[in-house]
Length: 495
Image (cartoon, rainbow, N blue to C red):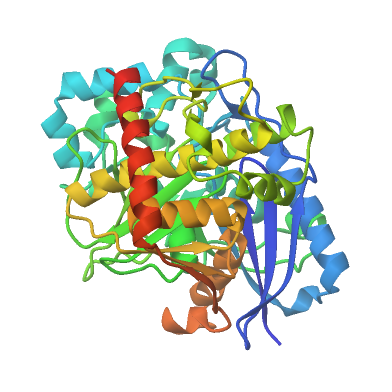
């Protein structure tokens, strides 16, 4: 029997899955830690994590997986990695971390990126990079140079979070083409590293690791790594992708017109196109998709709402006293559609690309002390997240990106019937929920990258639709009325 391990490096936890290659079944799953990982916030808009924490929690998660499944390490054929996108990991010449990682939701570099967007010219940036440098990894690196010059002078290599974990496993310093695009390190027009953007920022493009394939041999486990992970020395790492491209891959979203969604800490809608296109305001962000090739262009158009699951988590900790999410969802379901007039704006997790990198903060509108209880807060929050995602879906449709059917894993906020039902009726889309997640997708990617699966089609055996949610006209009309009020309130906040 051939087994494949998938790893998902999130900002809340590290998840691992065990795939039985012959059947396509996920036969084991584990995560660590039990509570959410710490995000360091040293100043407003800052968000950092210690990369070594990811590594230690990965060790714990794999130990749990072994306890649950008793897998034989000699039967692990390959490993795949999914990871939180856009983070910056800085390493010295000994490939040791110099400072905590500046992670995806950190907004300290917004002004750096916006200044570059204006000075280089919007048309130039969009034609060359398809994005504003915005708050992406290259702008975070410039922030380090400006504000921590002694740190910048010690940097030998920079990496994305998944590159760092691969380095810890294999000793190899490399990244992928998709990874270069997510950091705004790639010039689409030239088909090369964006050297002119590095020059503008006064940065050294030699800090980037070398390029490796998304699918294929990326290195084998070192003796030290194998011992710590409880795996066989030399086991290949054969797949790596950012969490959103990987989520789309895990849902078999690979071709134009197909759309994936995810509602973890952040909420994402990710549609595939074969065209070079961009949003003039850089609210929707194109990146190179996992199956892009010279003969078949595949870009993922990413809409992101930072304040999704983290809003639900905040409510759980502060209002619901750590009540299980299932009970929160049950309380939300007892409240009528529209939460008796309560409108929630979920923008409390840093700057929002969807809003032109503004940081309006989260807010609750029309809160009535004699009417609204915590069930209203739960439902209002879920509806507010849905409305934020739908606001972005409208922008995607304006860009001629078709959004008719949305595929998602039956996980995180999609476990809530209120959330799934509201999103379907707000967007007018059918939602198909599958029994998959990021770690499972990474395991399937490892099987394809190792050659065990010969085609993309083979990757998805064993994966069946779990639930199908369809809009109905009466509910869509009602939610549409509430969304219109929500949207008017948003526009007044962000003028």
